[in-house]
Image (cartoon, rainbow, N blue to C red; front, side):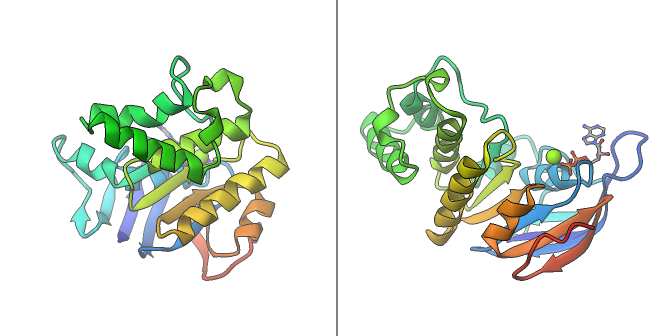
Length: 227
Ligand code: ADP
Ligand code: MG
């Protein structure tokens, strides 16, 4: 589903953020990307989301080359991906329901369908009872669950989570990662970037370790080996 072929990324005038990355991620996998701050985790995710483009090498998503993806095709590509961030990025003046419904409204989905879809997805993340609340009325963990619901609303092929537990306490972090594991079991590919050793060990699935822009470990069922 995702393929990196000798991919390097160099930000303007800097040393490479990623260097000679070769990587394949298949449908249904749960892949944890770990490594110290600055090792290139976010850059790797941004290349998949086509937020950044490779400096050299090729990035493929569903056999489509993402280098030089046209502006016209970009929204379609991104609809296949649900993004989750450390800082949730919810719309503060919209309720839980509206935050999740927003993307569907923009896409012109009929109201009845929106109502049904959003309710169903909020139930998956156990936030159905709080759908009338505003983000500031929620805990960090609850906000992240809403962000996950929003990411799921287009039924994406892959969920990409960049340090989703970075602002959460250990117990809540575990809850969020268990939710991601459940979503993976329901069929969605998950790519999780984290530097939280406990979280990654808990997932106990494929682990990629990045070090200074290079993959130094890629193990099928792994533990976080801090280098
Ligand atoms: P991580 O997510 O593992 O912390 P990043 O992918 O954010 O790593 O960063 C990798 C390297 O690229 C770092 O040296 C960082 O400073 C650099 N970098 C990231 N984004 C940019 C940018 N937009 N412009 C210039 N340098 C960047
Ligand atoms: Mg990062």
